[in-house]
Image 1 (cartoon, helix red, strand yellow):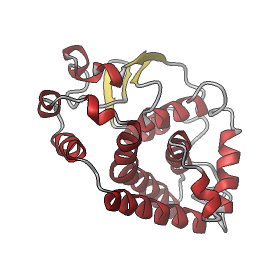
Image 2 (cartoon, helix red, strand yellow; image 1 turned 60 degrees about the vertical axis):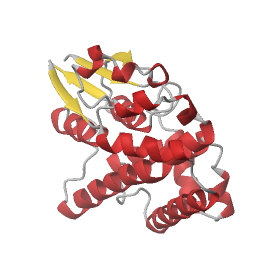
Image 3 (cartoon, rainbow, N blue to C red; image 1 turned 45 degrees about the vertical axis):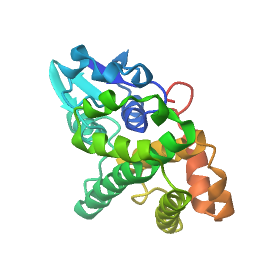
Image 4 (tube, one colour; image 1 turned 180 degrees about the vertical axis):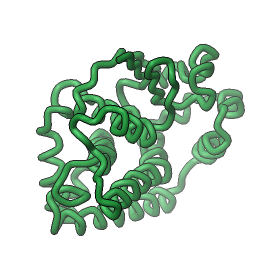
Length: 231
């Protein structure tokens, strides 16, 4: 078994999802940090591995696997111990749907809020934005460079809260997001709620009285794949 993970060690929700999966499944891997703050993801050496300039990228036996959700599904299908994908078709659909929703929320909410709160966009030059290999990322960064209004931020936060309420409803009658078992859906949303905490906004779960979601987050934070080395 030869696994290498190219990832950003702090501040990359997508990288966190893959680390959670690898540790849950008990897989050893070579960790290669790609520092996004130093734009290492846009260096020629990394673009040879991932032409989109995005993290994470998994290399398994010289095979290159990209995009966090697809990496996690690949890992679960190749390494059968500690399964994370349900076998029942409807539960499998639900897990994949929730992973896709988390990815959407990450792109449409957390990405904007992270840049807005940290001020990172102010360090980007117009040349760097124009040369980014991903078209959607260029548009996103240009929009941020122009500045978000207070109304924009409120709209994003309201959309995020509505999604969190949806999760609260699921957890009100289930131990985990897909029923009785911990799945890739829980992994995806663990990374998302962790980002909420990193942004100093976890109090919104208390303010909106999302008690089932808070209980779920306490449980995932106490799991072995979270504790000590994942974040």
